[in-house]
Image (cartoon, rainbow, N blue to C red; front, top):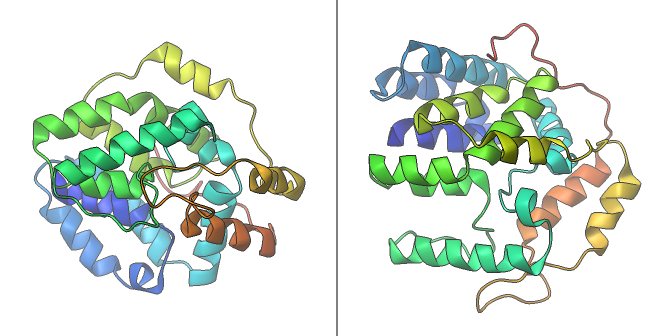
Length: 240
């Protein structure tokens, strides 16, 4: 299970040259994973094939349009339940303290609720803890998966595998509540500007002027500078 979680963590991270070049290694890791079945392996391999078959800039642009410029697809988990409120800050403090208590160190610039980071942490935990923590976030994961499937995005495969690993049913009412939020247009730079104007989330002793994290800032800068010229379509890939 830890192997699959590490793979998904990498696949949901901002595409790098290293990731694009690691197709063979990733497929071997999927094949060696003992906790995913043929269906889950097929979903992961389809996503790997899609990512590693793309030009790096194209993969990065698509990622920005989906996850950086579409707020309802944010990979920061608490943004879906707390927005940019102070409640989110406290939730991240609690999550960071959980990481620290387990000896899992994160960079001070990283937001604890970033899904790839959360999955990396889970990969170090017992099967019981993985089940418990994934189940707690399952309504968010299910809502993300539904939104990605609506866009025919191959990234939905990663969420499908996470739901299979959790082996539980999400709270239908909670999922419906998240899906009731209006979709955001990734081409609407005025809406993006409003995100910049919101109050920064603070957590921990190092919180300050840049407490929302330079990674968040960097992705917003990428999003603002890049043209929204390509669609994220994966209609020729199985995504559930």
